[in-house]
Length: 171
Image (tube, rainbow, N blue to C red; front, top):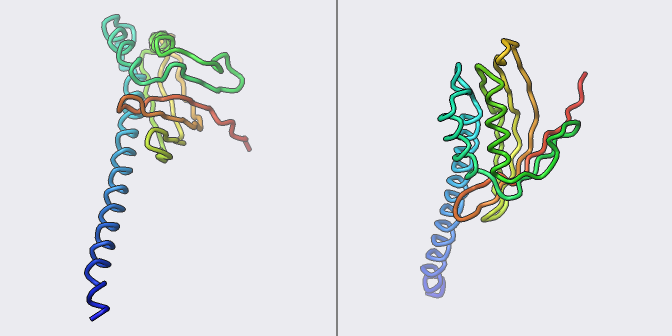
Protein backbone atom coordinates (compact mmCIF):
# COMPACT_ATOMS: atom_id res chain seq x y z
CA UNK A 1 0.00 0.00 0.00
CA UNK A 2 2.80 2.41 0.91
CA UNK A 3 4.59 1.69 -2.36
CA UNK A 4 1.44 2.41 -4.38
CA UNK A 5 0.83 5.57 -2.40
CA UNK A 6 4.15 7.08 -3.53
CA UNK A 7 4.41 5.40 -6.91
CA UNK A 8 1.94 7.65 -8.76
CA UNK A 9 3.47 10.97 -7.54
CA UNK A 10 6.97 9.61 -8.21
CA UNK A 11 6.07 8.54 -11.75
CA UNK A 12 4.40 11.89 -12.35
CA UNK A 13 7.50 13.75 -11.11
CA UNK A 14 9.84 11.62 -13.25
CA UNK A 15 7.60 12.15 -16.28
CA UNK A 16 7.53 15.93 -15.76
CA UNK A 17 11.33 16.01 -15.33
CA UNK A 18 11.76 13.93 -18.49
CA UNK A 19 9.50 16.20 -20.51
CA UNK A 20 11.30 19.26 -19.12
CA UNK A 21 14.70 17.81 -20.08
CA UNK A 22 13.49 16.96 -23.58
CA UNK A 23 11.96 20.42 -23.99
CA UNK A 24 15.20 22.06 -22.83
CA UNK A 25 17.20 19.92 -25.26
CA UNK A 26 14.81 20.77 -28.10
CA UNK A 27 15.14 24.47 -27.22
CA UNK A 28 18.96 24.16 -27.33
CA UNK A 29 18.78 22.40 -30.69
CA UNK A 30 16.50 25.06 -32.10
CA UNK A 31 18.81 27.81 -30.82
CA UNK A 32 21.79 26.04 -32.43
CA UNK A 33 19.81 25.82 -35.67
CA UNK A 34 19.02 29.55 -35.51
CA UNK A 35 22.73 30.30 -35.03
CA UNK A 36 23.68 28.05 -37.94
CA UNK A 37 21.19 29.94 -40.13
CA UNK A 38 22.85 33.22 -39.08
CA UNK A 39 26.23 31.86 -40.19
CA UNK A 40 24.77 30.71 -43.51
CA UNK A 41 23.18 34.12 -44.11
CA UNK A 42 26.43 36.02 -43.44
CA UNK A 43 28.43 33.63 -45.66
CA UNK A 44 25.87 34.15 -48.41
CA UNK A 45 26.05 37.95 -48.08
CA UNK A 46 29.85 37.85 -48.32
CA UNK A 47 29.81 35.69 -51.45
CA UNK A 48 29.89 37.35 -54.88
CA UNK A 49 28.70 36.04 -58.24
CA UNK A 50 30.10 37.62 -61.42
CA UNK A 51 29.81 41.43 -61.36
CA UNK A 52 27.14 41.42 -58.66
CA UNK A 53 29.78 42.57 -56.19
CA UNK A 54 30.07 45.96 -57.88
CA UNK A 55 26.34 46.61 -58.34
CA UNK A 56 25.46 49.57 -56.18
CA UNK A 57 21.92 48.46 -55.29
CA UNK A 58 23.08 44.96 -54.27
CA UNK A 59 25.87 46.39 -52.12
CA UNK A 60 23.54 48.87 -50.41
CA UNK A 61 21.04 46.12 -49.60
CA UNK A 62 23.81 43.94 -48.15
CA UNK A 63 25.26 46.86 -46.16
CA UNK A 64 21.90 47.57 -44.58
CA UNK A 65 21.21 43.90 -43.87
CA UNK A 66 24.64 43.16 -42.40
CA UNK A 67 24.22 45.75 -39.66
CA UNK A 68 21.60 43.49 -38.11
CA UNK A 69 24.10 40.66 -37.63
CA UNK A 70 26.67 42.32 -35.33
CA UNK A 71 26.80 43.75 -31.81
CA UNK A 72 28.09 47.24 -31.18
CA UNK A 73 31.03 47.02 -30.74
CA UNK A 74 32.02 43.95 -32.73
CA UNK A 75 35.53 42.69 -32.02
CA UNK A 76 37.87 41.06 -34.54
CA UNK A 77 41.13 39.45 -33.48
CA UNK A 78 43.14 38.56 -36.57
CA UNK A 79 46.84 38.40 -35.63
CA UNK A 80 49.15 40.01 -38.14
CA UNK A 81 46.48 42.14 -39.85
CA UNK A 82 45.09 45.63 -39.48
CA UNK A 83 41.67 44.15 -38.76
CA UNK A 84 42.36 43.40 -35.09
CA UNK A 85 40.10 46.01 -33.53
CA UNK A 86 36.57 46.84 -32.43
CA UNK A 87 34.11 47.96 -35.09
CA UNK A 88 30.56 49.27 -35.18
CA UNK A 89 28.04 47.32 -37.30
CA UNK A 90 28.07 50.18 -39.83
CA UNK A 91 31.87 49.99 -40.13
CA UNK A 92 31.71 46.23 -40.66
CA UNK A 93 29.07 46.70 -43.36
CA UNK A 94 31.26 49.29 -45.15
CA UNK A 95 34.30 46.99 -44.96
CA UNK A 96 32.31 44.11 -46.41
CA UNK A 97 30.98 46.30 -49.23
CA UNK A 98 34.53 47.35 -50.11
CA UNK A 99 35.77 43.77 -49.81
CA UNK A 100 33.07 42.56 -52.22
CA UNK A 101 34.11 45.13 -54.86
CA UNK A 102 37.53 43.48 -55.01
CA UNK A 103 36.08 40.24 -56.43
CA UNK A 104 34.32 39.15 -59.61
CA UNK A 105 33.50 35.81 -58.01
CA UNK A 106 33.79 34.76 -54.39
CA UNK A 107 32.44 31.86 -52.37
CA UNK A 108 32.74 31.47 -48.64
CA UNK A 109 32.15 27.99 -47.32
CA UNK A 110 32.03 27.01 -43.66
CA UNK A 111 33.18 23.55 -42.59
CA UNK A 112 32.99 21.74 -39.25
CA UNK A 113 30.69 24.36 -37.76
CA UNK A 114 30.46 23.54 -34.05
CA UNK A 115 27.91 25.61 -32.14
CA UNK A 116 27.59 25.49 -28.35
CA UNK A 117 24.88 27.44 -26.56
CA UNK A 118 26.49 28.37 -23.23
CA UNK A 119 23.67 30.38 -21.72
CA UNK A 120 20.28 31.77 -22.77
CA UNK A 121 22.01 34.73 -24.40
CA UNK A 122 25.55 33.48 -25.10
CA UNK A 123 26.93 30.98 -27.61
CA UNK A 124 30.34 30.10 -28.98
CA UNK A 125 31.35 28.53 -32.23
CA UNK A 126 34.42 27.13 -33.94
CA UNK A 127 34.71 26.38 -37.64
CA UNK A 128 36.90 26.34 -40.73
CA UNK A 129 36.20 29.01 -43.33
CA UNK A 130 37.29 28.60 -46.95
CA UNK A 131 37.36 31.66 -49.18
CA UNK A 132 37.66 30.82 -52.87
CA UNK A 133 37.28 33.16 -55.81
CA UNK A 134 38.63 35.41 -58.51
CA UNK A 135 39.62 39.02 -57.89
CA UNK A 136 38.63 41.90 -60.15
CA UNK A 137 42.11 41.65 -61.68
CA UNK A 138 41.43 37.95 -62.49
CA UNK A 139 43.78 36.59 -59.82
CA UNK A 140 42.61 33.31 -58.25
CA UNK A 141 42.35 33.25 -54.47
CA UNK A 142 41.94 30.37 -52.04
CA UNK A 143 42.35 30.92 -48.31
CA UNK A 144 41.49 28.65 -45.40
CA UNK A 145 41.24 29.89 -41.81
CA UNK A 146 40.27 28.40 -38.47
CA UNK A 147 37.88 30.75 -36.67
CA UNK A 148 36.24 31.02 -33.27
CA UNK A 149 33.18 33.19 -32.76
CA UNK A 150 31.20 34.45 -29.81
CA UNK A 151 27.53 35.31 -30.30
CA UNK A 152 25.15 37.16 -28.01
CA UNK A 153 21.38 37.09 -28.10
CA UNK A 154 20.02 40.62 -28.25
CA UNK A 155 16.28 41.28 -28.58
CA UNK A 156 15.70 37.67 -29.61
CA UNK A 157 18.35 37.67 -32.37
CA UNK A 158 21.77 36.00 -32.26
CA UNK A 159 24.40 38.62 -33.10
CA UNK A 160 28.10 38.15 -33.76
CA UNK A 161 30.02 39.76 -30.91
CA UNK A 162 33.62 38.55 -31.38
CA UNK A 163 35.55 36.69 -34.02
CA UNK A 164 39.09 35.41 -33.64
CA UNK A 165 41.24 33.95 -36.39
CA UNK A 166 43.19 31.08 -34.88
CA UNK A 167 46.80 30.77 -35.90
CA UNK A 168 47.44 27.22 -37.05
CA UNK A 169 50.94 25.79 -37.16
CA UNK A 170 52.16 24.70 -40.58
CA UNK A 171 54.12 21.53 -41.26
